[in-house]
Image 1 (cartoon, one colour):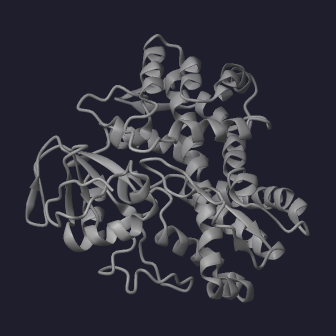
Image 2: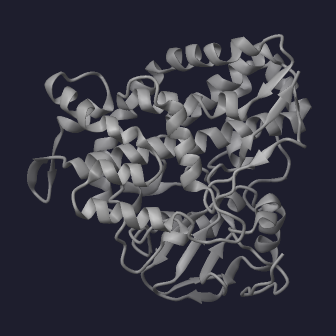
Length: 419
């Protein structure tokens, strides 16, 4: 493990690009909370916060800790020129976009999807009954979220596998290399500048956007009950004017929703399989008391956050732990560490599906609270419920399990199980 510098705790090193650090993240974060709650990494030029109260404070203060310079470490810059996604905006611009997208994620809309998620899980899981095992992520957990998200958007069936594998390619980072895919991001920016919205989508790793022009044209002629129809027929006030969305804005909405809804839920379901294998007593509770499943998903999210690192740009000097984080610094908010802070969660390292959780930070909080959180929770709850109905006991083959390697999401790409 390479050495680095800290504001305190000189022998502790946190590097989001280091495979060893990523594999042992919880142990590293524990030491950060204890020895360097405000951490400085000289090699990559960022500060990091690891304690619950500090992370929550920064999440809530969108004026001081901005998302408008990017939220992924290797992409953050003083002048942000990448895709105009809602996640890379601050209020009030962010608020306007959020109001639009929230139309697809109302409580009523999400609740209506439960039957559809249940059918999908049954369709995927039933063929594995009686065969002794399968890869819980690659053959199940990574298929559910893109299928549901693309259906919510209004894409026809058939794009799910291509889309999720394109996202895997885009997110993957080789050992020690910061800034992978930067060439693709730059190419996408150039294509957007030329107005080539569909080409930009291809540059970012998936040909799914080739279907967008025709789909948008169809929805303009014949609206359906999906998000694409809502996007092409929406006129909202922006700076006092009513106007339709541009193709670039629609592209950005589609990409953000599809990426966020695919990657994080796939990682969540991988953790569900691993954590319940590691804690069979807690799995037995869920078998005998299925009513605990919703809280079990919350505990999985708390215990191992699928998206444990979020970047912010510091717009003015800010003090944490008696030290100043200077203006124009890059600051990483380690919500995956905050969720294990024993100052907020008693016995934080104990996995407990009965735990009272007032506020875990895996979905963020405040203005940037994950807009798809209700759908992610629904998918997790239904997937776990349907899994336990068919396979109440399983064992993970850890020798063949593989982790995803990115600077932002954390979890498994492959989780072979036997039963």
